[in-house]
Length: 178
Image (cartoon, rainbow, N blue to C red; front, side):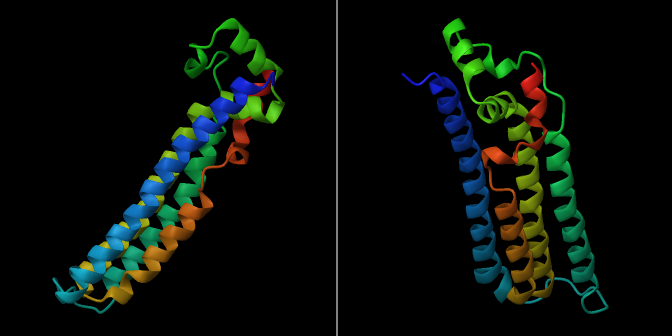
C-alpha cells in the first residue's frame, strides 16, 4: 500500500477544484466574446466620449494595472503564513495524519497550503477575468469588436499564467516546519 495515498488523493482533489474554477472562468471569456461580437459589436457606439480612443486608453491602462495586480496578489496570498494545524485537515483520522506526515515534502506542502493556494488562485483568476470585462466596456462604447480582442487575448494569457498547478504554491515551504 502506498503510504502517501491520502496526500495524493487530497492533492488531486484540490487540483480538480482549482482547475474547475479556472475552466469556468475561461469559458466565461468565450461568453463575453460572443456577447461582444454578436450583440454589442453590431449596435454601433452607445456613447460619444469626445476624443477618439480616450476611454479605450483608460480601459487599457486599467487592464494593465489589474493584470499586474493579479500577479502581485496571487504571490501575496501564496506567501501568507500557514496555521500550525490547517483547518481543512481536521477531519483526518490518526492513520491519515501519519500518512500525510510521511508524504514527500512537496506534496505535503501543497496539501497544507491549500487554503492559501485556493484563495490566491480565485482572486488572481477573478482579476484576470476583469480584463475581459474592460474589453466588453470598450466594445459597448465604440461598437467595434476589434476593440475587444486585445482585452480578451490578454485575459486568456493571464488565465493561462494562473493555471492551477501544485508547483504554484511558492509560499508553502512554511508548511514543512509544522
